[in-house]
Length: 372
Image (cartoon, rainbow, N blue to C red; front, side):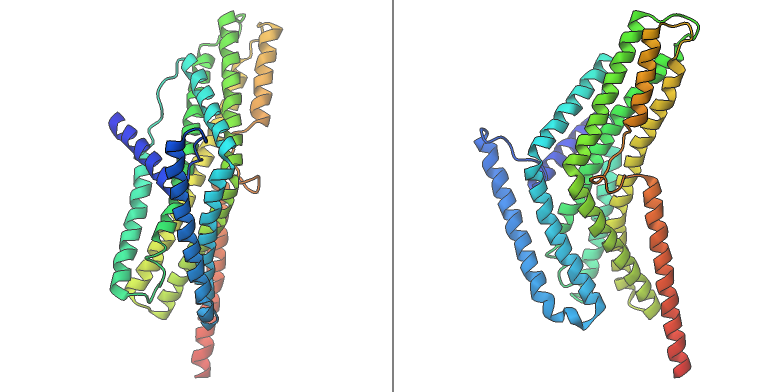
């Protein structure tokens, strides 16, 4: 299992490097800087080529609303790809700060006796495999029906994987921070389970609690820096992929309403799944980190000692206030937080508007049948 975990991390690191999703190395490392810059230049040329293709489709954009929406999605994905490459360059200092904070928090946890890293392969590999499966299905359908569904599907596949691997990268970072917060919660639970309320505190207990408080602060700072490092990219990914999911779900319903070919329905359904699963996964793990932070805050109340010294109880109160004001939350530049409440609200809104559209479709069909 450890070999699979190590192999997964190394492969993902190589894929992120090939996608241009990691910061540039220092200028002193010329041997690694040159190929990294070359890869980014290749991606920029490719994305500019996609933009030129999208501009060339403007003549057919007025033929139908579907063409307008499809071209908008294609252009939006291309622009977002350029912005993600730019973000990885501009946020180089912030990314280095994130790595330093992660190292400091890991070192603090090791001092507390918490060793090892969380298993990511059992969670990341199914996510990647699902996306590969959906793309394989769409590729086979596209080969069967030609360019009827999407004339740019084949040439835009590298761009789609650039966006999805950014999601995988974000999920990996959030999972890593969640594992640290989980280890901190377990250390705090072990301290609370051995706590004797009516016994004065020991120097070792005070030192351990102080170390836990500092570890909590390092993890909180890591969450803050993560939101700053990837915030604009998360915001753009959320907007574009949500729009992609909604439009493909609507096209699938329209296909059922118009009794289209099963292959076209499957293509739109696979596209909706392909873009919906990364959003749900990222929000799920974002909510898991927030839940760990809430449970840590609940555990601190069990550490107070009525007969303890003022110094120890003040530290407990300070730690409790810290967990109250410093929450483990991943945000997209403070526009929204990644949690299940927002995800459920989004899903409810999508279902509501789709139901309204379906009602309009049935009303239109009834009106045509009545007039005929």
